[in-house]
Image (cartoon, rainbow, N blue to C red; front, side, top):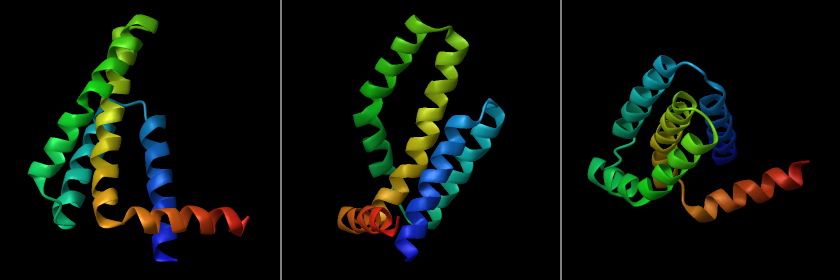
Length: 111
């Protein structure tokens, strides 16, 4: 039950990140995510390495957004992707993929 609540919180928080318009609020969320990672004892070096590995996807999405819209919208989406990564990575490190799968399965059967 606790893992299902964590999963629902992660989904809701990620949705809030992508609905937020203000870069200032996103910056506050980013620093809260870093504090959360420190509290959960996530290794910063591993987190930076994982960010480096997905940076290609983030840069490509930034470039596509520049082509399809203006630079301010593309920058806001770039910030949102970075903030969502800084939240999802500690979640991924604290809950195993098997438990996440069980949470998905149980939430589908609950409805």
